[in-house]
Image (cartoon, rainbow, N blue to C red; front, side, top):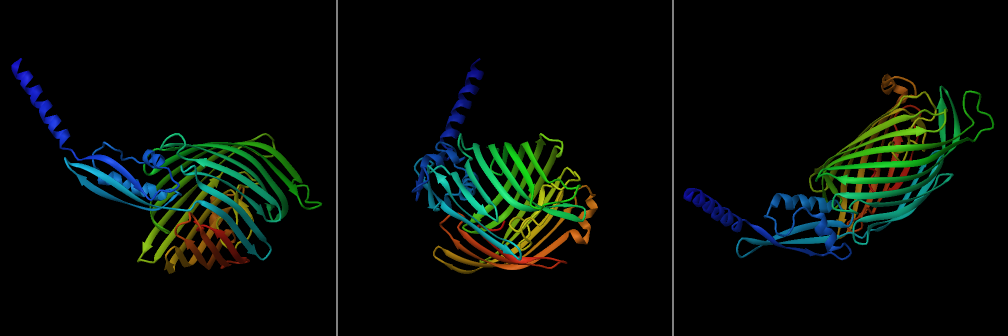
Length: 420
């Protein structure tokens, strides 16, 4: 029995000694925070007081902090104390987060604008709330609330209301007619951040869709109007490995969005729709940023004029026009090179050149239609960005896109924030 007591005592002494000699964090200090609550930052961090010093985890927290809307930039210092203890000092640069929203776009046949305002750091906890009004010949408005860290540093909640109205073309064969489309929806979304790179969102939406033809007579094969109540369940999975340095971005991001929609009428079948955005950013020298987005999407291939994918000026191809075509599949590639021509204090001026290309699957037809030349659109153009470093997402954008393919449009696209 004596040797058992000896071994146990020796083990306890070694363990206690090893613990005492472990580098420990005894204090976290947050400097530069004015609106963002220190308690929120402390809850958000993975590294905590009393834990072993881990530079890899601290660096991961720095990257996560720079993704927050309220944070422009952050650095840290490790200050050694006696007895292998350490004081971690975080130095924050905050963003101004009450931001106006403005978009304006024009093509040969369309002029439209969108105005709104959003607060991205409500109560100092990176809660966003706001809304917008849009006029493109019709009136649209929306209200949005999103608190991704409402319950903890992993669990959040979002609420959205949308009353959308627009004039859109619907196609059947070689015929088309214009409809006034209206969508009134109520949405609830829950979010879970599994780890540093992966986030899941699950949402449910109840909405009503109306289509009313703008023409006196459209033919027997095209419905004059449609009014349908629908339900939508969606899953969004985001893998993010982006690093931000003010307005420069580097790294990879993937966003998958899958939705199942049910309808209460026989004119429209239940359908599934999914798309994935693959985004890649690379710093080029001190002033260049190469940005790329590949979007691949498919839906249930119903032979219907009410196809879910839209070819639109403000979404995928700059200069193409407002909802000029629809399809049950979409492949779009956007690439642009951004170059900083002026950077003084908080004001930045960027120029960019871009190419937007895409193809659509005709409703009811095979995947081979992606390769048909009449379904492929290519646009190229140049743009200008005026950026404020300390105001979140305050990036005034203007692009001019010119179609390179047959019967293409051209036009300006204005907005706030990078196109992607």
